[in-house]
Amino acid sequence: MKTLVLNAGSSSHKAALFDFAKGETALWRSQLDWTHQAGRVELTAQTADGRQHQAVLATEDKTTGLRWMLDTLVEGPVQVLSALNEIKAVGHRVVHGGRDYQQSIPITPAVKATIQQLFPLAPSHNPANLQGIEAMESILAAVPQVAVFDTAFHAQMPAAASTYPGPYEWVEQGIQRYGFHGVSHRYVAHRTAELMHCELSDLQLITCHLGNGCSLSAIRDGISVDTTMGFTPLDGLMMGSRSGSVDPGILFYLMRQDHCTPDELDTLLNKAAGLKGISGLSNDLRQVLEAAEQGSDRAQLAFDMFIHILRRQIGAMLGSLGRLDALVFTAGIGENSATVWQAACQNWEFLGLQLDPAKLQRSSTDQDIAAAESKVRVYVIHTQEEWAIAQDCLKILGA
Ligand code: AMP
Image (cartoon, rainbow, N blue to C red):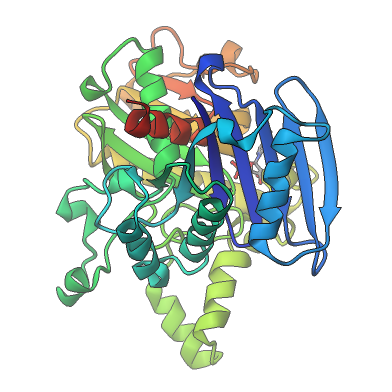
């Protein structure tokens, strides 16, 4: 079954085509970037056999851009299909599924209406996700579509973990911890169980998704029982340009002292904080580490804070588990930075967690970097969110 996966954002669209007969490597991947030039969209595409394509189209219309992107599947340098009707399913990454969706689901008018009702909770994501769904409905009219929600994996968190200690009215208003990166946390949890030759239901894990956005999930019996992101993806860990958790009193102070508006605070905490805000240099950890090595005190502080907050939150996740079988690192930082693995794991020797220094070289395959005698395994796993979305399509529609 050939399955297309679409991650539709407000300024970029990422798509991948999988053929289950050929395994988890995408046959074709493509990206549309709408950010560089007004009125133009840039396309990049590549195939599993190494062919590449780049082009620019003068349009502002997202559906036109997506139609153009799908045309590269059937003609030109990255062609991999003879006709679009070979595509049997489309899986969509949808950021917010609210309380309603604990699992992936075939898209119906009722599902679309719920995604729309959730616009206020994910104003920069759900509208773009719905637009992607509607574009695919118009381009691939007869093809069944599936919504895979970033929040769904966390939707079974116990109320004590998902409820904020505000007034009880917040519960009725849907102001609660939803958590995000669920597709990634779920995928790496299953992969860890596979690598440990165990049932996921027998394991207690902490998964660390450390990319531009960062979050942790405490996983018990295959269920996310706690996570660091909250009502929005701003909560929790220090990130590339997002602050993570800060004392909300700071916001009142800035509103009163500096007359900051909600939009200014939003920009400050989402775009000018985190590694970028503290280092004054970049949201990219590689550049922050480089500057720290060259003697930048602010870059060193940014890195030290990133690690301190990560360890503090790993400790918080431990509090939601009864034991720890494995700590799992994934995403851009989590998959690549031996400096972060070492620094993040330093505090946990008292749990019997020990890294193997010989295993800290980056390897292209998923690996266990713990010492043989370590009581806690430590995995570095390449997250494959698109593949996880495609697999959900197969589960739901394949039969
Ligand atoms: P993602 O959001 O998963 O694509 O992750 C992107 C981020 O991963 C970048 O902004 C970098 O901060 C980080 N990253 C990627 N490679 C490395 C590396 N070798 N060392 C440290 N950080 C990295």
